[in-house]
Length: 391
Image (cartoon, rainbow, N blue to C red; front, side, top):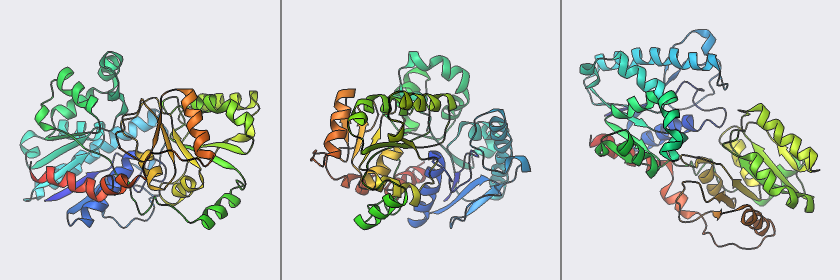
């Protein structure tokens, strides 16, 4: 069995920024190979790809699309279409030449949609097609998303209706697919994402102290939030909840990292901090590279907070837990680990939990051992392998 993990074309693998789907593709492939599977990544051609030990088959695209692109404008959409068409041709070529069982594991609606449309049904029968639903849109009530699904996610609907295997990250997505879209329940499987426990781990006290000094945080207590800067990730909500607490505690800093998706939203955070006299305590630290750099920030933090309005799965949450940082998340998030984090239900409880953690007092949430045992990529890859083999 040959497993092809298919990159989205959004940004090259390995991801140079917090592109969660590219991280999933990279880590799954790494663990497939570690587990003895024959696996390879198919990804967009990139002139600025970082060195990586994993086998990558590149899909050639016009030079204007080979530079890493993190925007979401017209050129980004055009890049997705061009890459997806070229990708379909590459996959068709693979199928025509192979006699072994082949698995094409897609992670993006554009990629699979064009493959399905441009490849004959007869040729597609030579492969097991799998599609993982990463879209956060499915994680809310149907009445709230129906129009958005019809306008922006019709390709994804087509993909899940025509996949041999559909992987989802939460129960509400299963319900929408089965009851609202008529997808065959027998092809849908709830899976998990994982964490690289070697990349995300606790550092020694001396190293942490050195890092804090290097970044100008010596003597400060740090609250850390990771995620694209936009309304859905709710950094502004975090700052609003923490405003009075920061005013009363000048040694505490709220720092946030991630690509700026909404510049106006980001400016609103800056304006609010200035208007409330906490501008020096609200620090944007930019887009951090996954792995070593991000792990350093998790370790410098005295607590990590995740106040997102909506998530399909909290990849950054399990990264923080694996790094040994106390984690506080909202009760609205679909995250069901039994240990390793604290959960708040309102703003008052959020601030109280932050204060308890920063004060060095003990809250009982477990040590997060379940993350290492259950949510590591080797375990996740084994789960996928079994489903591929049994299909």
